[in-house]
Image (cartoon, rainbow, N blue to C red; front, side):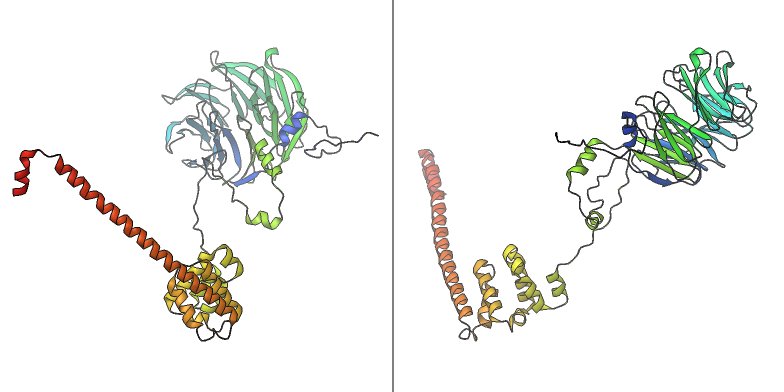
Length: 511
């Protein structure tokens, strides 16, 4: 019977769930990072250019976050009332947003004050966006109008009044700067052409439209409203292709991924669903509250979800190198992971690094010296591990005790074993002659009582004698070298005098 070798399993699928490449791709995200905003998050928009910062519209302000930062790197707070629909321009340098008061403001991403302010709507402006040429802004309002504005002159170019209810969805064309799509609570989705000044296509969604979305080829259009997500074929005059009903409550937002143009939808039922090219659900993200907005980074590295409770949920994509490092390291206990948590963290470019002073902890012998416990400090310094692996610490403690004048008190009352260790230490490391003299003077009266100490002190005296002889030999060598160096200088002077002309001899003698 052949042996069975199981393959590596990355996760356990649910009962009846089919494991596909799309499912594996969308399961490869980390646990969400929760960021608390000041109100319900109504709009999230990623910058189309690297490093793909994203603007979050909530309450009366717009915050711009970096991909890996949990604190805003830029804030726009020049709104008297609730802000809506913050969107980037194609170059990521300008940001446009509407407001509850009916004004539209244009911001420079590097500044704080509004560059332009467009006035004309009589009610709240919930959706704003740049057209693909970057010089015009289109807006949809609760006053049932859709207006186009010129950015350089802040003048209204046109006003469209074909909708009969609030306009809450907008999607400009990236291929044609004169086309854009709007969705309204009158259950219709309209495609407008600026050249004709009217709609060229109308689709009946059947429910109040919350979001419209164009595929990159702009042959397909997505509209969400009620519990339904509908796909329309624009090349066939707006024919309905698919009607999806996978959510239990109103579908409020939709977006596309860059890999494979996978469709993601968010709903008030607190679920984000991912569809494949056949419009089958391949993955599901669960959230803590009803979803109002959602966006995916252009490189699929981040999925950001905004909820009604004012929480921004950010999921970062895992990388293979992160998995390899986690699997290669041996799993430690929970206490170890708690103490080393964050030690290997490397700050990123968008992070704000706050330095914290490191508390210096004293060693045991330092604490004992600080408390004037000289005997205990000497005992700690004479421990086996300290005197063998770090003998310089032991010698430093002894020198400090000698400097304080408390070395005799620390050495008094020692047993024979400690005296032997003390003498052996000076046999191994011979750094300070005063400490040796103190040791010899202190133990002079008990030499005849302990043969061990007497033997060690004799060895110490022998080492001292050899050290003195070595010092004497070094002094002799030093004297020889001084003699050699001194004998070289006169020879050079004599040679210089011999090279002088003969007629300069009397002058030198006279001098």
